[in-house]
Length: 370
Length: 154
Image 1 (tube, helix red, strand yellow):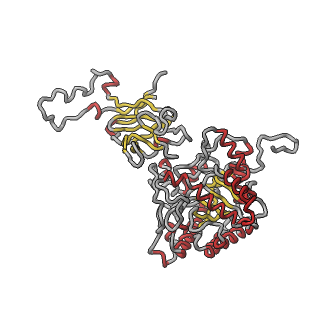
Image 2 (tube, rainbow over the protein chains, first blue to last red; image 1 turned 30 degrees about the vertical axis):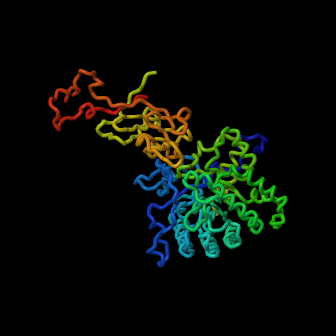
Image 3 (cartoon, rainbow over the protein chains, first blue to last red; image 1 turned 30 degrees about the horizontal axis):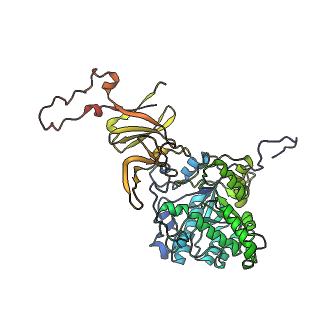
């Protein structure tokens, strides 16, 4: 609780001038040429060829009430994102996460995937981020080409609005493996977060999206995204990524958070007996998660009784780790006004902007991004 | 409570399978023409208050056993554009929990000028009924619908 110089207790418990940061807003292009124009000559004729999600959503993946004026796909009109979402909800910063059909980890060809990532980044810095200074951006990399990915991170990471490096949730091998570490070294050096968002799970050259194999339907696929994330997080923590790069911050977006209490408890419990397999972990595993990893709220957990949600927040240390996300304009988004259930003010301020400001090192005093 | 009457548009401009979104008395309302019958539902999902009536309109599935699908209620089910919850436009009832999760519905119908002014006062309500023979002339049509107006009562 804040006190002014007279010692009066003020209502606002947050020192920050921010009120709401949205961790997951999907911008896209109306026409593939917007990206293809930035491909090198050797891939100009190919354009954009990426593995698509074969699971279908009977209600569509994009919000049908947010089509553009000319009937194009929701998210392709950047001004409309500002009008219908940022202005409407007084959002201070929106993390643009791009298009989750751009399945770079599921492409077999490393060089083409890397050039697609570069073309996406050109589009991001030339055509997207200049549109509004509330936009902060996720740059893309091809995880199969980690050395080249590190070069891209150093090339685009200086842009003041680029605040994170996006990895698809699904990949060929788990993200803790040392082959990926050049990317992490570059991201830490550039003060960028690493982010994981659902795409590529179970398509192209990626692994099946569950340990049990390929699901039958989209309901099964979507429900189990958290299980893929558990695999990535266990790998990142136990392989020692957060020991090697202690200042590297991670965002796990759209993979849920209700599983975190179980996951952290089990990891800590196992560490007591199996520590000798991971001797580089000087603290219990949950210590590293609480210090270095943030989780986006959408899709919000909807337990049977509302008070159970408060218990999840307490058990997972949401005041340190949870960040609000809308997933605008996707079908399963959480509205800024109606998505979050009621909770105490301190928790709400932490989730709505304080944790995000820490994750992306955002100015909280109204100054410009640097 | 007195109902308020709102005219939406001439019935001839509102074909089966179409929908309209209108603001009536400050409320956004979806009006649907399902095979010639009109239905109105509040454009406000009970889950997170999304514009429910702007979602995909179609049918839904039922099943007697795992692996088998029946396609039912074609054109009668709207899926909320956020989260995909299905609602029957004729009742406002959700498909997954019809008794507890419902959208508000309103009375919608076609009214001809004759209805408004009284059944005997003008209009063409009698047209066509005195034709003789098995095959009606091709010019015959139902002027009640042609000249009617889609109205919603809130």
